[in-house]
Image 1 (tube, helix red, strand yellow):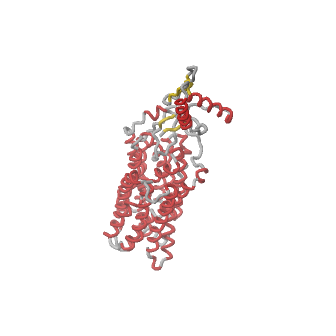
Image 2: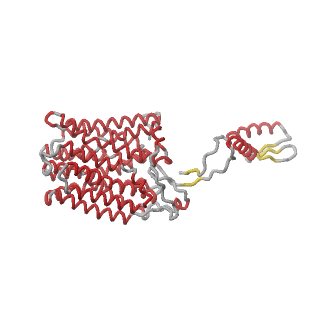
Image 3: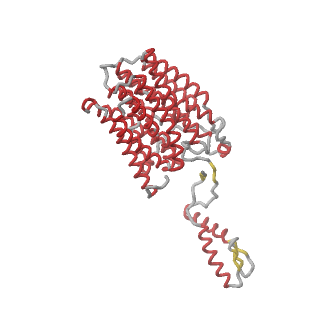
Length: 501
């Protein structure tokens, strides 16, 4: 990728003009023995043996036109190779030595693993909220709260993680490690304070808002650092970091169930809270930025650019992605409660959630790999459509442990396609130069998808016998509607249904 350091001059097809003149002069010189023209060097020799460089003459003419029209002459445009691609989410840096020294690996793999650990504990904990909500409704908050209120906590948590991502760039002036330390403190306190909750609003403020805010700050800080270490392997490195979410759910789901059974919910929160403190501290130590020592810290300004909202293709992508993402956390949050309703014990239900999260991690890596070859938007559309069909066709008939486990495997693999392809697709649509703002707006808008679980709860309360069929149909329908909007966007951009995009 090359980025010009100066604004592009007035667009003129100089070479085309020169070649046209050259063709005419060649014919003319063939009929005029007193003049000769060399089309290779673009030189005309007149009868007086004076050679004229036509390309130089036309270039001087263009400069004169630009001087009279724009008040300045054309200047040579210097290109800078930045190695930025559709997986990048950082703005170009005006230091050529920075790009020349990118190791495309090296210590970057340590940074990617640090991102894996951060996602493991932070997003892993967010993913298994269904396990805690099921236990809270069964024990501490029995007859005190409804499923709708419990899903509201998950909504606040998801909204804080996604909707507050713009805070990290604003705080980046403090430096990455101080910002990550602030996020770690908020995350840890959020879980520990949740252990003392006796009212629903306690959970909303602690595990919902405080933990979500801390997780968002840590996540966005690491995500901004990883691309500094890679060129061609940037997408794979981001995939390693993202996979931590799935493996976190796989490990934390049975761990949380074990801790709850052995020590109760309050101490489970405290133990996982201190585990969060320890892992995030290791992440802070492992992360290292590659910005040049003399690189100025970013100014305190929002990454959101309102002008992006005028791009119709981009807005179609944002709307389609947010709608399909609305259905993602519904099965994950509802599987423990649904499993209980069909006679599956708490230990097995937490294992099913863990398997679903593990398949989600595997799916992100494989779907990202497939997207690079058959088109990222194509992959997103197919995966979202299949996820919706699994919710509508497979989940209602998963009435035993084995069939529910099968649904968890299928949905887990395809359901997390948004997290694997959101940034690369955004880069393809808006261009590398605007990807930072594009991703920021997308993450902010994705906070709206957190309304999925509480809407599902309201649907279930309105369904006869509190059946889950309305929840299953709603989850599947939003996946498919979002995929169809993305299909419309693809056809609008490519003018084709089957093109690779």
